[in-house]
Length: 201
Ligand code: MN3
Image (cartoon, rainbow, N blue to C red; front, top):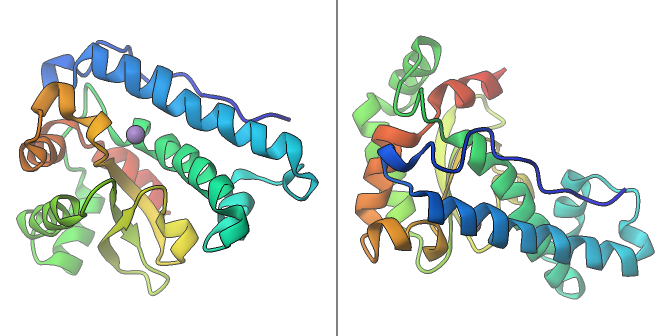
C-alpha cells in the first residue's frame, strides 16, 4: 500500500485572509508535500524491510540510521506535514479552547509565556526545521524544535500536538525573510489549538 497525499482540510484559498496565500498552499501541499510522498514510496518500493510498515514505524526505525538517512528525510517530512495541515484552521485559527488553556497556564505560566517559548523555538531553529507543542511522557506540555525532517516521534521527546513548518517554502511568499512575523501571525491567526487539544487525550 503506497503512502498518499491527503487532501487539505480546507480550501487552498481559505487561509489567505489569515496570512497564508493560495499560492503558498498550492506549492507547499501540491508540490513539496507531494514530492516527499512520492520519494518515500520510491524508497519503500526498493527496500523490502520498509514494506508493510506504518509511517510511524518507518520514522522510528530510520531515525539516526546513516544507511536510511534518505528514507528518514522523506518519511519524517511526510509525517510532519500530516500534522502541519490540521495544525491550522481558517475558522478557529488562534482561538484557545478552555481545556488546553488551563493546561498551558499550568505548565507555562500563561498563554503569552507559551507563545513566547514557541516563538523562540521557531525563530531559533537555524535553517530548515520545525517547532512543536508536545505532551511529554511525564504528562507536561513543552516546546521543542527539530532540524529538517526530524520530529518528536523520532526523538522520543513526546507526543506532538501542534507543529509549525519553518522551512522557507512555508512562509517566503507571504513574509519573505521575516520568519518572526510569520511565526507570530501563525500563533495568533492560524494555529488550530482545538486540534491540539483533541490530541492531548
Ligand atoms: Mn514544508
